[in-house]
Image (cartoon, rainbow, N blue to C red):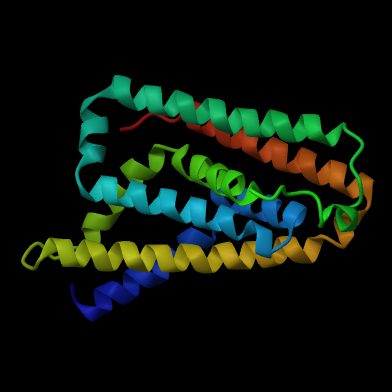
Length: 212
C-alpha cells in the first residue's frame, strides 16, 4: 500500500468514524450516566466488536452473508430487536423518577458492573451486520493486490480502530461535559427520550436495509 493511499484512507475513516451512530450514541449515554472513567468498558466493548466485525469481513464472512440472504436476515433481525429494545428501555427509564446525576456517581454501577458495561458495548457494536458489508466494499479499495494483503488489512484495521477509539474518547468527554446540565431530572428525562428515539430510528433503518 502506497503512503498516499494510506493518508486517503485515514482522512476518509476519520470522518466516517466521527459520524454519530449506535456505538457513539451508546458511549455518549454511558458517559452521561456513569462518568468518563466508568464508560471506558463500554468503549472497550464497542471497539472489540468493531475489530471482530472488520476481521470477519477481511476473512470473507461478508461474502457468506451476501450468498446467504437468510443468514443475513437473521443477523439483521437480531440487531433490529436489540436496538429497538435499547430505544424502548430508554423511553421507559425516562418515565421513572431518576435521582440527579451527581447523586448517582457512587452507587450507579455495582462492584462487578464493569463487565455489564463492557458486554453492553460489545452487543451494541455487534448489532449491525451492515458493517460487514460496508467493510467488504470499502477496505479492498485501499489494498494493493500486488503486495501482501494480510499486512495491508492489518494496517487498515489498526488505522480504523485508532480513529474509532479517538472518537469514542471525544464522545465520552462530551457526555461527561453534559452531566452538569443533565443533573436536573427534567433534562435527564428528555435526554433519555432523545437517545431512545435515535436508537429506534437506527432499528428502523436497519430493518429497511436490503443488501445490493
